[in-house]
Image (tube, rainbow, N blue to C red; front, side, top):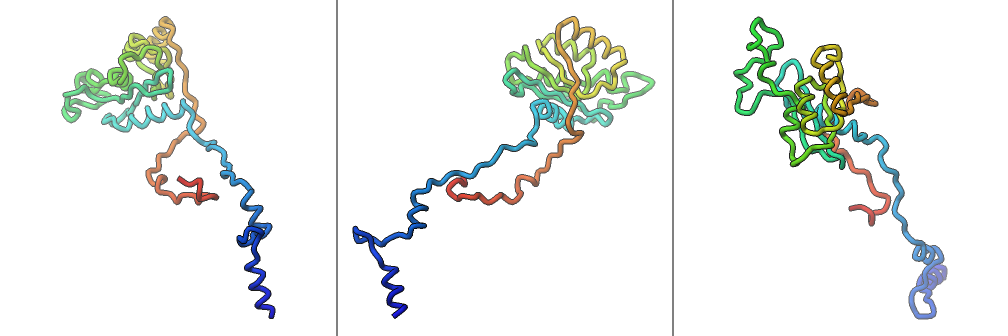
Length: 215
């Protein structure tokens, strides 16, 4: 007898002859589903960190054994329009030209031959015009690169290191920048390192709370 009552209870129907739903089931039906709420990442890079990191990353293409310098030109829309690093001119073998910093003969040093990062970033531009742009560079620009920066119409220089501050060429750079109305400022990072981990993209994905919201 108890088993028959249980079976009868399971087959109860509503007025329309359809199986009756429990109160819990009916409540689930009328309760709207909402997506899980998550906040955005808070440890993302700032624009300054991002563009300076691009400059430092491009510097890793340099063959210079003593100084690897990169530069990144950015327009007003926060888009990169030029990247460069220090190296020998196109068509000139960096295996045959010298990389020395000191020699009895200046022609046996790198200085008469190497193109600086700022020069290459400006010449490598992918835009017809870089007037009003900013340039991010690892080192404060020398006087020769400063001339190019001014002539290209760049209006802001953001640099990381100013280790040659008291050298004549950097003093000349500041004089030229001040006269031309080009602003310059030193980048102060929140952290000393930005690590690029290629394996992070293969990390285990987090399980979505609602499968309907998964891509």
